[in-house]
Image (cartoon, rainbow, N blue to C red; front, top):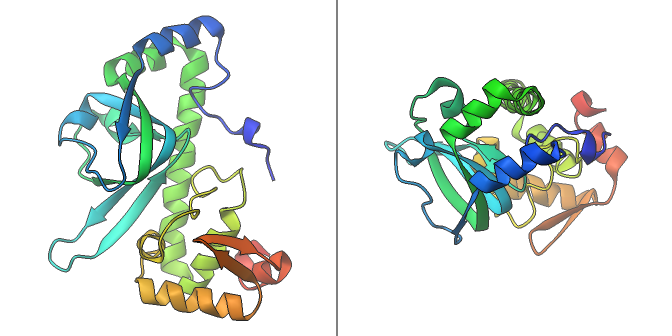
Length: 225
């Protein structure tokens, strides 16, 4: 398992003069739980860094009401990198899952940094690569593994700081939101959680999962054993 300080986070451990330049451009933005955070064109003008809290981005099928959560952004996560790269509006929805504090940067300023600062661009592109790998893993998991296997994997990765897009995601998350992250429904997640508790592999208190038998939990999915 990697230490958290080995993860390439673009806005951390920068040269002091560069950090001062970045800090001057930052503005704070706060949202309360359940707020709809952005107007349609705001993410074409800004890049957002989460300081505290959680925001999810998701796709919605308006015909049947089904949702698929793409990311749950938490502390040190950055969005929307897709618009940053291609300049087009990103057709996704956002929802604030808990009270959240953001730092906001003009998107043109970040593009200038990517062009002019090798230090910043190296870290930023590594971060984007992590995002791409996360989406690739999510897609293959949904295609190749059962819901119970995906849930166990999500629980295990929630305790791994090296997995920057799944670490500490489940804390305070409802079973409904966990289901949307896994591409299933709440009843299915609740049934699998109950089975894991009955097997004494996990315990759950105040929506916080505790792993009791790590090795036995890993044995349930061969891809992590």
